[in-house]
Picture 1: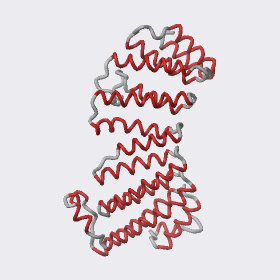
Picture 2: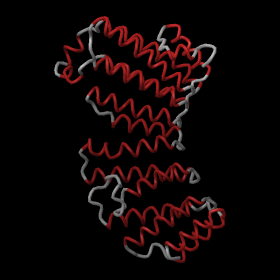
Picture 3: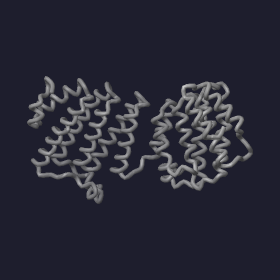
Picture 4: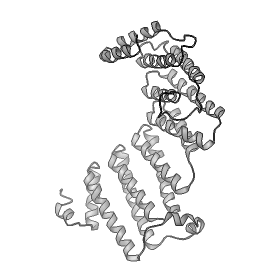
Length: 345
């Protein structure tokens, strides 16, 4: 297999410390070597099983522990749990320089998740929570270095979910505030906008928000994304979030998240007219931005489907937007031709 780890060692299920060190050398050289990560986990599982067997201990029953959380917290770790904790912490530490050098390597993040899941399985909940809280601090530092590292954002969601499960406390408010902070630091952060969209329905449910409170949050979000779009209308990640907000108003979309409950046609017309006016204004100085024309056509089509209203848009104006798209992006002529047919322009 390599000059550090032989096929004979693998076939012979050699789980010695020498073999474990060999996996460390290999992974330091090439962390994409996922077969070695798998073998490393087998070694760790063997060590853990031997520790448990030596003391006659079994896994932790977290449900039983919840019945007497204070007593569980007061009780110290068993010998096996102490060894497992040390083993997990040492391997987590081994991964840190690798993450710094290869922050977008799937296998490093996967192994880190496995280590924490293993700790959760074998340690009391309050000790597992401590480890997961440490992970939240680590991933915050990683995202401070690269705020658009989607591996880090995915890992953060998993970490928060596990902390919520183990502690029994929601973290929606703090995570929503965190997305605000990250967006203010860097508007072009698709992962932060995406995370925000996933948190909004939960945030409203947790707050037991009234219709007025829901409308205020939606208005605030439209104000936030509109300011961002005025800053950089060429940033596609901003348009994705704007589309998400508009999708919450779409009566034909059964999968649309519930933000504004009991959304009437009057509500839809209000927001469609508001956003059509805002986007028209963005065109001044950004006449070559195709995202503007795409949004105008999309929302104009929805507007006409709901109700013609006071004729905020006309087919003549829509043809003009489509003509501009053809000029800006001639390589997608087929797409614009299909759109012309679909919208009957």
